[in-house]
Picture 1 (cartoon, rainbow, N blue to C red):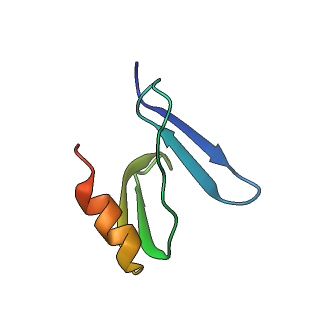
Picture 2: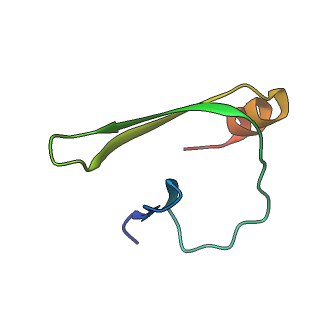
Length: 64
């Protein structure tokens, strides 16, 4: 399955889907997010730096 990116232009939300599997767990928290785009305005990268300790622990446990 290719990566799917959905952008809500009205609210600025980005959803990236990497798998067609159903999630068994998710976490929320505060984070600094950086979005890099190319000269055509397409996403090149997204960087997430959690401020929330629980979110940081959760992300640290994720396998790429």
